[in-house]
Image 1 (tube, rainbow, N blue to C red):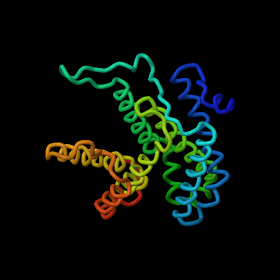
Image 2 (image 1 turned 135 degrees about the vertical axis):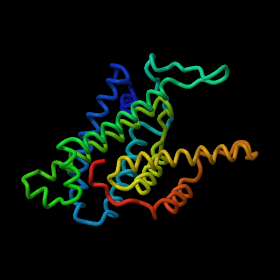
Image 3 (image 1 turned 90 degrees about the vertical axis):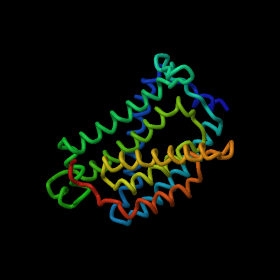
Image 4 (image 1 turned 60 degrees about the vertical axis):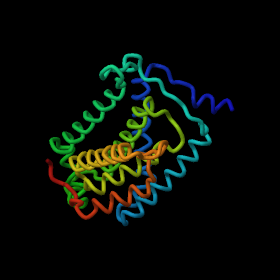
Length: 253
């Protein structure tokens, strides 16, 4: 169909211009979603927000299938990030993956600084702790919630766009990431950036050690260790981490 070909046409302007356009659209989408759906759920249980999120995931997955189809699409990185760094005589490491690591560290540091060292971060932490008190001080808590929700959507979209050149774009590419994010939040603690970073580091270290143990013990060829059943991985991670999950971290580090 002509409209499907148009939806997959490149925007032009380069990789970073596309990132900027995607971020602007993501902020607008997040603001509308919070206003239309989630603003009515804050007085209810968290489970209803989770169910709403999952329902929207199903809706957007179906819309994605209708608009752009179910094909796998490769995304080329910028030319100056397309090379690789030699690691000895036999191995190389892509420059773009180093760029991804630098972006992740910069985002984590920026989020920590905003939440722990700025007036906006103080207001966000106060609103998460006592919404009524913040509202009584004359702060538009509804706008603050929409701003934070829109920023969260923009971060998720940004992560997908940055990861696209390394993993391609395919149906359900965010499913395993969603499971991992859930595990990291539960183990690291809601509202704790340091806890989330530590939980993710421990999770990756556990996967690498497990992969190395299987490979050195003569594991079967073709068995993907790092991509195990998400349900099994989630259950094991929660069993090991939910007991020591810290409370909501509302104080700056």
